[in-house]
Image (tube, rainbow, N blue to C red):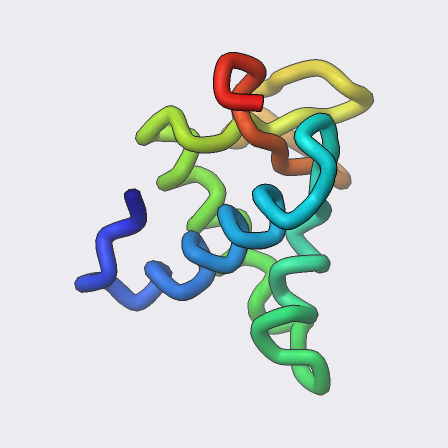
Length: 89
C-alpha cells in the first residue's frame, strides 16, 4: 500500500488506480499517470511518475516492462510500461 506520508504517494496511488481500472492484462504508460495528475502541465511529472513506479516495484506492487518483457527500471532506456504483477492479475 502506498505510504501517504511522502510527496510521491499521490502518484503511486494514481498508478495503482489506473491499473486497477483497466483490464487485468493492461499496462499503462507513465504519461497516462502524469496526464491524469496534471492534464495541462504533465511533462514535468514524467520522472516523478517513474520514481513512484520504482517504489511500487520495490514493494512488489507493479512490474516495469519494455516490449512485453519485465525489466529492471534502473536499466531501462526509452519507453516503459507499468503493469500489475502476474500473480495479482
